[in-house]
Image 1 (tube, rainbow, N blue to C red):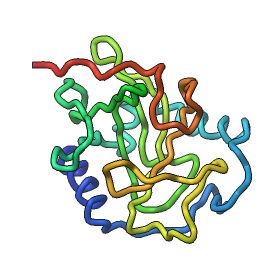
Image 2 (image 1 turned 180 degrees about the vertical axis):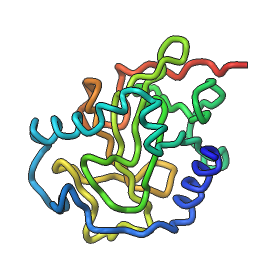
Image 3 (image 1 turned 90 degrees about the horizontal axis):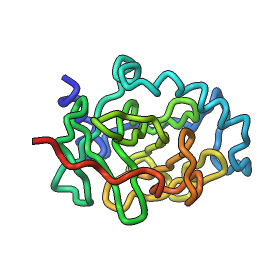
Image 4 (image 1 turned 60 degrees about the vertical axis):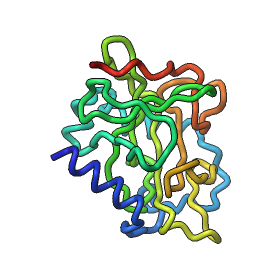
Length: 192
């Protein structure tokens, strides 16, 4: 069931079939805000996502593994023996890990990210390191780009979405909102 749902999410992203709603954080529109991610906002985000430090909680709450379609491109490793077989992402700029996604519908809520990002450690141990906010291309108005924490979303290099990473659970020397984190290791070798 989870594999089907992940496939549907990926297909929906590629086909742009989701609907968009006003960006919200309990009624606050974050588009155009000049707030650069106050400690208070990050504390709220960490409190909201703390239960997801345990993947079992995220899965029980409806998050599913994101596996990138091989036809889309980019570097991703699969076959790691993790729940749902998510794709693992790394680059020469650092690692990102694996993503578990939920609710990619264009609604932006700071305390309900569309993706939870986990680094993959020894023996497949997962550590929550970041969250990611995702809006499909078809739902983005170029005159009103989505923003959170004073940061404008940017286009993904090969998926038809706009994204914003927030390294809420692991320090990133490249910046809190950078895509890659040199402190996140490379993806492990796939299991046989």
